[in-house]
Amino acid sequence: MVPEALGSLWAEPRPANPAGPLPRDWAVVAGLICWSFGEAVLREDMAPIPLLLLATLASVVPLPWRRTHPLLAVAVAFGTLTVIDIVRVVSGSEGPLPVGVSATLVLTYSLFRWGSGREATYGLILILVWLSMTLVVESTSVAETVGGYAFFSFAATLGAATRYRARVRIRDIEQAKAREREQLARELHDTVAHHVSGIAIQAQAGRAIAGADPERAAEALATIEDAATRTLTELRHMVGVMRAPLDTQFAPQPGLAEVEQLATDGRQSPLVEVVLSGELDNLPPAVGTAVYRLAQESITNARRHARDATRVTVGVAGDSDRIRLTVIDDGAPATGRGTAGYGLIGMRERALLLGGTFHAGPGADRGWRVDASLPRTGTLR
Image (cartoon, rainbow, N blue to C red; front, side, top):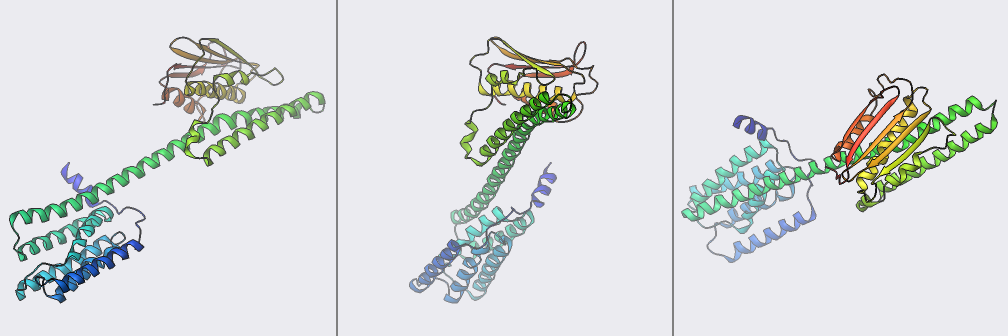
């Protein structure tokens, strides 16, 4: 377990698309350099001025590149500071370093926020070497030593935590995008495919009877025009939802009231009958929409696949606990009609997401039967 965890950390890649030097980075660099120069001039208990200036520049100048090159920034800063401490030990120089050296906390944070696993490991070694040496050089007390390690540990932990939070946020965004893509694919399949199937069937019928019965052919063209208009309207609605702000999730969706509109008047085959019964009032929008889409997709499948079907019966019955949908066609005995395509998969997902059940298969005598049962209080899981 531990070797696997360490291996995972070692192989951790850099976060994508880090920002390069920003104007505010240069402002921070200028501010820290000015502060450190003033400190070196005004205070008499500091280390020699050349060492102060070198320590300041080494700590501050790499800051703008801390996101794109975190290990290089840490190596330049802490490597130079380590050399300075060695010089101080050899020369016997005393006195604290300027405030600009505090920029090393930012570099430590950036190493664990933006560096890869390997870079964080190598950088941590450099940080610990310098921190141990500088605490010895400045003869700090036990409390100051503990405080020094605590500050750098906090900076590293904060960088790692921010990195993890950003990764979780990116993952959540990707999951939300995937859910939206699935929802869009389902809506396109359920709406556009339904109308286009009717258009194709009516076009075939119109061609077949155009010569013998021009009046019926004209009726078929009128039906095609109506279906095409509905398809265009629904496509525009979906595109509008995609372009609109996030609160369009509250836009009205087709529900139980629209199920009756799926019935046909017998001018196209198969005839679709819709029968509503029982307690169907005050349904949650999600349940009403699911019933409509399940019925719509079942009718589309019957038109596509039910050989010799003349009638499709849609029944919706409600009681105090559940809403039951039954769709039956009288086509030829079904053989493998549910083995291809995404229609049945999407229908089953709709029912399961609301805590319901779904079954589709050959009817008792002939044709195809769809049964779905949804709880009245169904909410998306």
